[in-house]
Image: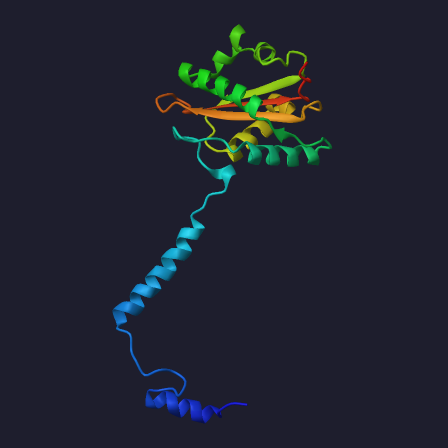
Length: 194
């Protein structure tokens, strides 16, 4: 079965165990090994979930699939079907976010050439039901989602019953008051190409 406890204790007290080789690592090697082990664990924990990643960077890009999943879950809790991320709608949203960032205000979205129905017509989807949220100042998807959910008008867009797709984007304007500009487009099924 094994050596009695008193035998193991006596071998340990004498400084050698019968199953271990009799060599010693310098303390510096052990210290280095411990530091590397702890550092590798810490590096694994620094990964930020997509919905908490800051969009206040020039190279930031919204994870549309994460946004679709978050909004779909919210819609499901309200008895509505899910939505999927649509790259064409995300491109439209990106154009809107960039226009607002360049102007430094969400009011740019009110200009006639920036109206959603006009932009949907430009991509051949004039008859597709679509609604849009524009906002500024939120740095993460989680912040934007919470802000939209708390605003009756923005919440109505996320809970649009006809929506099956979404496009979402941000643009970063470091010199502006709000810095991060958001556009979310919710739309029904794409019109068939003829």
